[in-house]
Length: 195
Image (cartoon, rainbow, N blue to C red; front, side, top):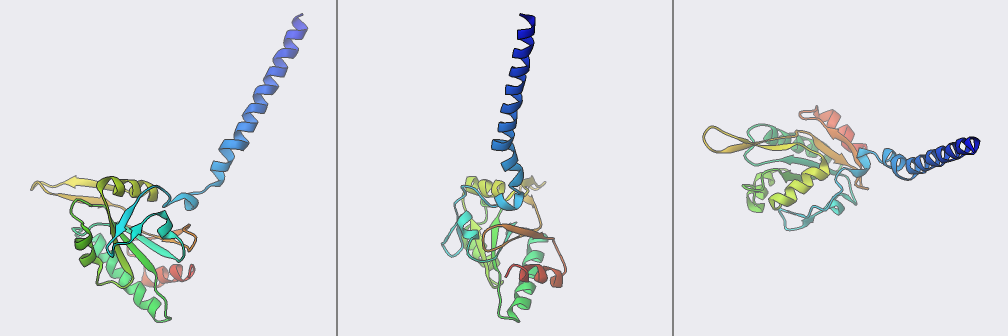
């Protein structure tokens, strides 16, 4: 009888090992194969561009796209990044190209479509994107960027946020981020690699 119990224990141990193996192959390994590049920008957000078009995860499809999260009251990072994007567009225009750019607000409380549209209108190929606070929060999660409201001593507030431009290919897959104040030649070379 004790011999039979040992055999049963070994068999149950093998069953447990087999179940763990099946679980690894069915659930864990597929997630490990799925990279950040495959999932960034995917989500249920439904925002609107400054020209009245919907902005969803499908907006990343069809052509290379650059996404930047910022806000119109930004003292330095956002105007500098828009200036950089303008330089990229000028360089790309020399060969008849242009990159589609979406400037997504992290401050929907102040950045209405009209305000945002005026803010980005001077840079070719850039559309502003806004929405409700809940939808902006959903987009922030989908793109895995950082944004936080910072109270000021005068009772107002500013926003702290990620400063990179996310570059996606025509399939909506992240190619790589372009760093804040990356040299124009380097940024344009990266953009041309997906065009």
